[in-house]
Length: 144
Image 1: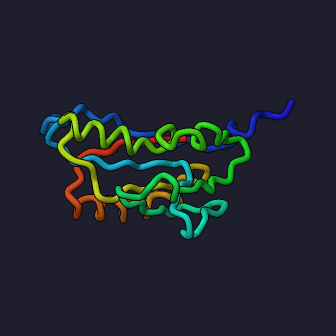
Image 2: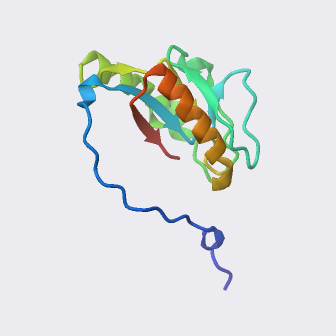
């Protein structure tokens, strides 16, 4: 019997990180980071092994977003019916309006999650610098 393809993927190990205190969520600027292969119409689609990301402005209408995630195993039905299933920007805006969070980042980011892990690190470091410049101090990671 052949092993499942996931059994061949080398999984990284991470050190334990203690819980860190910080300012309350109601004072934090929050960004969305997704692995759903989401991007604006006209942006370059994601390709196999692509570790890059796409920038999605906070004011981008849902009608201008498409998904080019290449996995045939990914069910796009939820995304097609409600963007918030894969990219909960409207929910984040609601939390901002209710005062639960301090503010919503002007830019959000999407990767394609089926890419090799080592392809993400350089782009993740780049992204960290961009978020720091914008004053982001909290992120909602939306894995697919």
